[in-house]
Length: 141
Image (cartoon, rainbow, N blue to C red; front, side, top):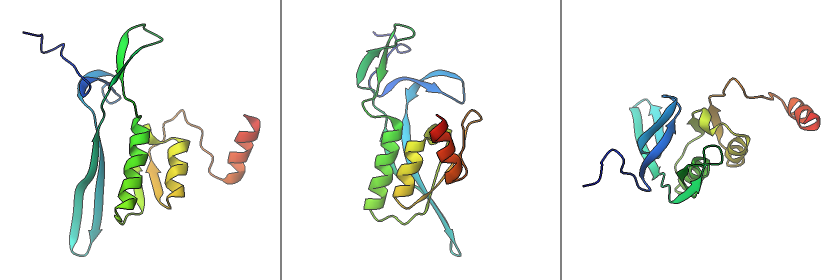
């Protein structure tokens, strides 16, 4: 009988949990959650999800240990979910996500879709609050 504590596969495997500051074993699920409120009340429901499947095995360049990796990043999954939600004609204006998704690529993608994003920004990030500031950073970098 296999040791159940050591068992893992493409779906049940190790993930870095930022809230715990360490790796944990489990199932990693990305969820699109819809929320609306009007005079009739609140609607809160999941409208899409994707299970992160780590189908490839690669060697970690720092530790030399083998680790499972996903063919598609969570950022790519998020962008796919946004596109699918728009294609399904779900009416929404805002995308709220944690700092994990606060990349320039995601922000530009969301703006091109005509939506507004609300992301937590980590302390170590540079933020340009105007086009002029952004150009200054691009030219100096």
